[in-house]
Image 1 (tube, rainbow, N blue to C red):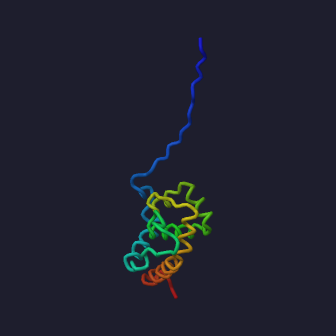
Image 2: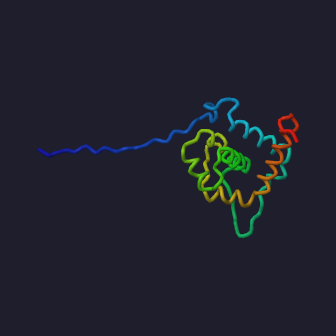
Image 3: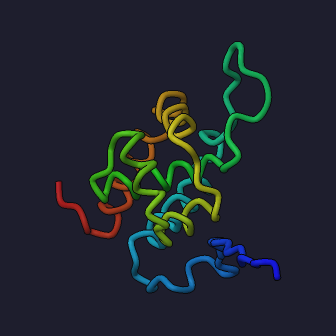
Length: 141
């Protein structure tokens, strides 16, 4: 009689949420950031045009610029400022980050490229948020 040894395979399934953001409260920081970035894009669409960078062909990011901007702002609020820390922050399966980036989490190199190539966009958004807060008397000069 032959000895039969069962083969046990461990597989980990990665589930994706169909309706991103359903598990987030209405006043969650990620929802507020997405709203502000969308308003910023509506008011200043010329800032979101893709830049032609010499020596680089093809689409730069699989994420939209507004998603990358929202991710940088959210990570900054969570005290994750370096690209390496932001990437590890993303790998914690943070539902808020998945909501901001539409379930397409970027790698460290893409985060670094965005921060370097679109620094003006980040600065303009921070100016916009201060002006937005001043408009509703949330910021006092």
